[in-house]
Image (cartoon, rainbow, N blue to C red; front, side, top):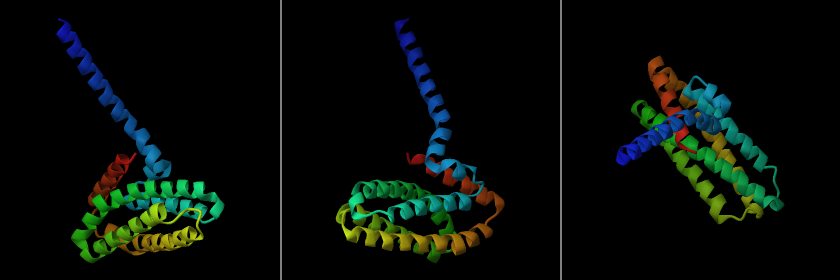
Length: 184
């Protein structure tokens, strides 16, 4: 009898945990993607809103001075987190689907992401945030990000979205949102 009660408690606890996890997903999603990204009905809108959020962080960091090393570290950590989430979405959902239609464009975008990761590594581990070189490298990084965003938003994503059916676009949108929730 004691054994059954412990089993019942364990099952109830497991069900409660699972229910809590399911209910927490919208909250986690809101925290990670923001209200605007969640409201986006399209994967391109979602990724575009994420682009704008990262650009705002860059703009704030470009206003810092060598005396703001703590703010620089914190802001760069925010960029790192946002780009980690964003690249997961693009590299696991969008680029593989794009690759089936345009291998060259997909490879170009993957290469851009490698360059982004290199910039992040340099700014986090190789250049002191209190150094004038840090801000100069951040400017280079922002130029690279801005060009990548223009390529995606002005050319690649619209072409890709237009070549897919409504159902395919809806499937990509769901998958982009699910991948975004994975990054806490």
